[in-house]
Image (cartoon, rainbow, N blue to C red; front, side):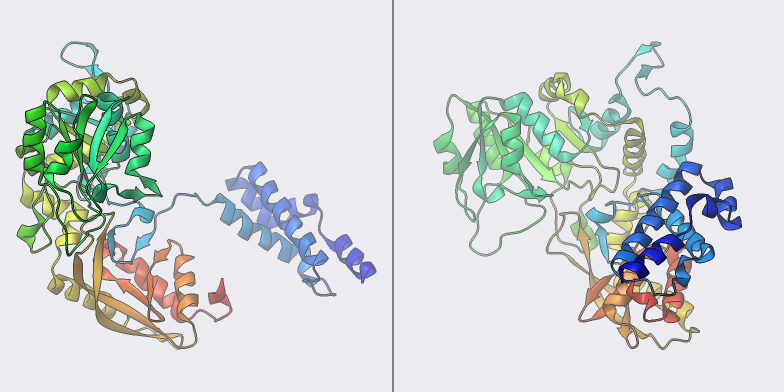
Length: 477
């Protein structure tokens, strides 16, 4: 057996032999030599392992230069592929955290080329001809839309909460309800953020009930802030009670203590007017007297990842002067995307039409039926022994830690296993180019049309037709 393995090891083509193969010579025209060599060495290492483990036949036909060179080309294609790639979201989760959250509006994307490909007035005051502030590009529009005295932006909402607490409450006490000590994703929790800020957390009330007197009883000389955290990613129902923001504001005014509300996935439109669960808006929080409001730019707002801070001018200015603001600042492309998204909110009808997140969340069931029917018709002529296709009713989710109880009635394409299992089909579609990300329910593959964009229909159709003729062994990849 050892002799047989030695004979197979000797048959492995040399690197120089592979480099002169026509297929790899052609690959060198479009790929750096170092990358081609990396692919060759990776394949040769894999082959040695396969021989050692007895996974290569005694004849060793797969060790000929031709099959090895084609294997190198496959590996070269894999390692040349960018890590961050476009995928098709067929899960029905609109603000999908793992898939990049909100899709940016088309007019934002149109603006990227000129700003990203050239210089800009990022921190240059064109009127005065000297250095300016990057925040002016969004502060005016944020104040206009929210009626806040001042605004600034950092790179995400956790950062917004962190810098606000570090500025206003470092070494002092912040009072917060136990029922609002949320986990904000990625196992990061409000208490963790508060500890990093240097603030001392004072918990009041219980998980399900907190009263105004609970706050009053703990206020003392070291109390610097009353914090309200909107539970945007879960809801406690039943025997519950929390202190309304307006009452907390009055309490703060009596004691001269500012009140801050972390809205999480803050929104600028009232979703209840579109038949959805009511979510507190940014404007309402400020109108009720909150001294500071923080929220995300890439959730219900439908823009890029950002943490937005609105409120009293003196407090926002203090936060702006904090040295942390430089470490947490956003770049020019995020500022561009946020400004252009916010400009759409000047007319809510345009915002609902052009901001993909808002449009997908508020699309009607009838619109989903028509959309599903169009996709189904594109697939009607495909011959298929691997699975059958049905249209069924289902429910989409808002996602992104927003509107947790809201189900959006939708229409789904359902792939029912025949020769291929549901897990084989899901994995095959996920390995497609571009990947089609689906969801599995009751041993079936579901494609929710709510989150599939019209421009993606041709790709989804091609993927499903290719899956229909895939061999079962191939589908195991």
